[in-house]
Every structure is written in structure tokens, then in C-alpha cells.
Amino acid sequence: MTDEIVVAETVRLGMLESTPQDVIARATRIATELAALINSRKLYVPISGKKYVRVEGWSTLGAMLGVTPREISTTMHEDGTFEAMVEIVRSDGQVIGRGSAICGMDEPTWAKRPAYARRSMAITRATGKAFRLAYSWIMTLAGYEATPAEEIVDAESHPFDDDVSKPFPPKPAAPPAPPVADPTMSVNHLDAKLIKHLVAQQIFENEHSAAKIMARIAPDKAPFAAFVGRARNYRVWKARLIDGSVDDIEATSLAVEKANAGEFCPPEGQED
Image (cartoon, rainbow, N blue to C red; front, side, top):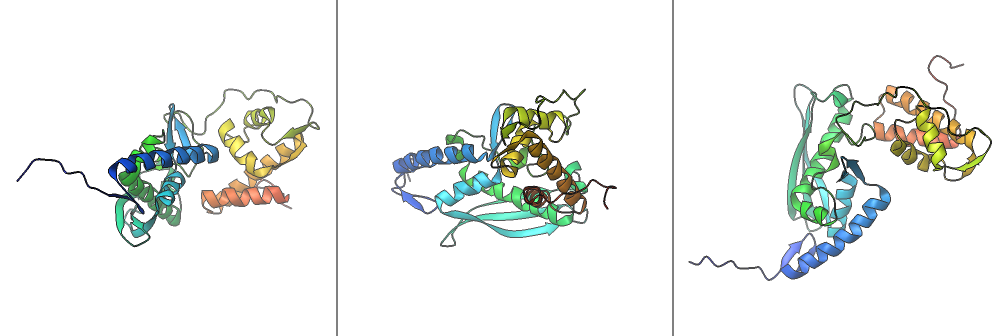
């Protein structure tokens, strides 16, 4: 019997087998590449000066390590709350980790959402939890918080503010005047004046959400007024789709497609 600590000669990190010394070196290299991708693709949420990674970023880390999430079970309780369990597995079927999470009816954002949307969010949260339990140390090496964004705030239902204690959507005291006087001037889809104008006109809640959507709506240059029109059309389409019980993520993608295709959606009560 001895109290001596024995260090294993090899360690498995997902599908990567290395010495303990190499594990840290490889994890550091992976963290560096991961951070570059998360930053470039905006797969994180800034909250009070800290960065929380969305589940897509955690899944990317898993792919870099040779592991994937697998849904084990999803149960709906009597009150409509969904509870999901997800495992992290290697390609050879070896289970690396497991996590469970719920999407409850006591959450104001989700209480009125369709059952399939609550089920999907429970699985999303469980996936993030499973990755966090197994690989939060690597995410920390990459410079991000160890907790997935979906565990902090509702990552799929609305854009994020820097302070989660503030009410959403924010209600401006008085919208400022449009910053651009000439609607015919040609601008880029991420022109700062255009983004500020879209927020001032309450087409988007904040500059972050405006820039995020406009990057998908308008990949070229066009008159200022044309971009504003596309943005308004996108918002009307998305509201109409959400009212039709379309999931928020799917509604966003469909609204972007319709706005880019020039499919006009008249506001409620103005249909022909």
C-alpha cells in the first residue's frame, strides 16, 4: 500500500491519445484555434464583460477532439417542462461524458412556446452541459467562461444585452433622428450609420442584432433606403412566422431568405 501518485503514461483526450505533457500542449493549441473560430463566427455572447460560448462553439470543440453529442432521452413532465439527457461519445462508441438539462414552464420566455421548441431547447442545454462537464478546462484555456451561454440566458429566443438584468426589449425614451439624410446614397450592409439608423427606427433592438442580421440580408452595396426596406421586410416576415408558431431560429432563416428574394410581406391588416 502506498500513497504515491502515479501519473498515467498516456491519456485520451477524445480521440487523441498523448502523454500527460502532450495533453496540455495539444489542448493549448486546440484552444488557440478554437478561440480564433469562435471570435470570427461570433459564437459567443458578451455579458457584463465576459464571453459565454453558445452550444455551436462547444460542439465545434467536440469536433476538434473527435467526439460528438448523442441524445439519450427527452421526457416531458406533466406541467409541460422538458428534461433531456445527452452523452458525449467517441467515434468508437466510448462514452466520454453526460449532461442533463430542462426547459421549464416556469421560464417566461418558454412558457408560451410550442412543445417542440421547449424540447429542442432542453436538448440544446443538455448538450452544452455535457461538453462543459467534460471540456470546460479547454474552453477556459481559450479565454471564455466555463459555462455555456444557454445556461446563463435564453440563447435562442432573443438578442443579448450586456446586462441580463435589464428588461427586454429595451424601451428608448425617444428615438433619435435618422443619422443619414440622403436615402439614395450608396452604403455597405454593415455601414455604421445604417446600423445606427436601424436601431433608431426600432427595426432592431440593438446594434449587435442589427449587424448580425444585416450581414446575412445584404452582402453587397445598395442605396441606403433599399437596405432599410429589406430590414423592415425581414422584421415583418419574422413576426408573421413567429405568430405562426415557427421556431425562432427557423423563422430568422426564412425571413432572411424572403427579404433577400424581395418577397414583400405587408403588415397585419394591410393584406390585399
